[in-house]
Length: 276
Image (cartoon, rainbow, N blue to C red; front, side):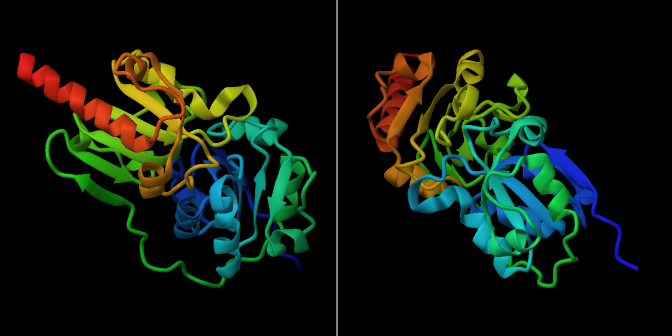
């Protein structure tokens, strides 16, 4: 007797789902990079569908599909111009598959297929056979002198220790489910994200105005300039695509580098302290 199809679950981020993901097909709003794929594998998903985040530099937005293939897990990504990144419900409602790994293709999931149909196809996936490797290191202190600069591969790693710091993330710049409170868990001094190709409804940059309202300077780098999911690439390679009003007031503008952004924020903070 054939096994029952896996459950299909949706999540705005692969970091916003728990034990219920084990053995399920998870349609999630995260980019399809290696770190997001690692989280999916640790959760024990049967299969996963991500957002391709504009694919971007070194095809980082879909690198997780190959990562999961090596672990025996079917995976696909929907096009960033078909559904909003960071919005699982929109992905399953409007998403159209742009990329699929060979295991997913073997189950009938391929480019051009509606996300909902692709999820149904992937629900036939057999349980995975390989455990993911040891945890990926995802947090790096780049500059220790105040204000400190942290490189965090996922914005989900922002914690109380980062209050007042500059956080350089590998995450996309989109709100999760369109909710302003998801822009950043704690009040950093400033924040950088990847624009994930900006995408439909400009979903890849929606954190910026939400952070403006909290007085936090924020910007995105282009997906073509830096590898999404890789915070050090954001810092070392990133070229700014969008900046919020708070960042613009510091003299930051699109076309500048991520390093320029960090330097401007640090300079402004030092000036503020000297004048206090």
